[in-house]
Length: 246
Image: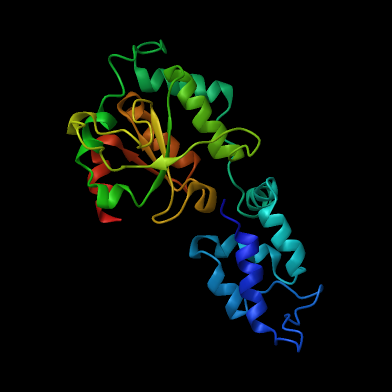
């Protein structure tokens, strides 16, 4: 499992001389500071802004928080306050979005009539590109619940107490499997949304940076973008072009 705190601490020790007994002279009160080049080089670029909240705090304490299973909740709460992160859609707003999305008085669309585009278009995204993005497909629940779950995740973050499985946006196709079925090992594509990380990062590291919106919800992409401006919302039929440019 990725342990950012441990990586930062081991890198920070390089800034302190080695004692005669072979141990680092780093003390218990050594500070966390982005001015320390060894600490700076250990932090992914996408995490630098939020790591500034720990400037001047005890290094050991910061590293323990980062590696604790609930540690990222501290950062998420701080960021919601610092950056005035939106609270997400209310129940009434979600109801209005359903009506706008489906354009049929808010009735749940048939799964057979929606969410086809991601299955079709992502087959054209090369593995060399798609494998560089970590992803999670919201699937296997009702189409209306897809939007509710997206709203919860973008508002509250990922619940570390619940299983949250990710996979490459495009994984290698096993030998003997036809191209049309080549989603084996990739994130699920049959739902309304696919959550995607920064390039070369895990969602656990970078958070949710991109959301591929499948055809059931094309009509509300502008609403999603206004509510969550720090996330990039991409139509499934434009995903190949979008991720190829990244």
